[in-house]
Length: 221
Image 1 (spheres, rainbow, N blue to C red):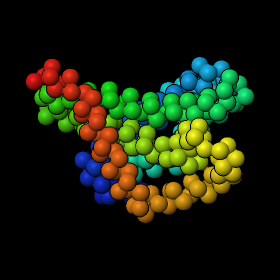
Image 2: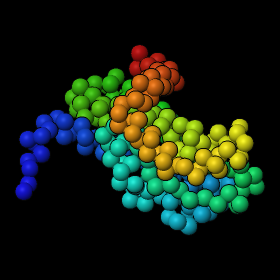
Image 3: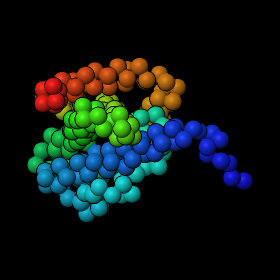
């Protein structure tokens, strides 16, 4: 039996989900390709040989992670494989390659904020609302993806950055439970328990992005 989608969602809501899906198709590949690129720069070509230095979404997508980001604004992709033995300093190399993903999302959010402001100031957003909504989502969802991945527990990128400041034995002990930790974090997300801290952080970063693109206001002012 086929259920009509327009019986569940309005055309406007369907359009919003399509715009969010487009953002997911951009944000996740950039995040994962950044891991692969920086790891390659640091001397490890494991991810490159696995085909992860690519903006093709299909090379990176975890179906559940993409769905969570589409619906809830936070998600993940298939992890990028690395071999820390190829780094001159394994501990630093792992932290730097891990940080590359969130940094790429912050850069995408910053660039999208520039375009968002230009669309609003030019009046294009009023004529074609989908354009301004798209760039709004590009800022918000890239910030959400970056913040979510900076949670300092395995398997998130933040845990590999935190390893610089924590005893190595604690990190690898926690790694043994990363699947269980991930399930707990997902449960907290779906129950809405993480909504407040995540939204407060994203709102703060949104304001910083507004400040960091102040030159656009000056140009259009």
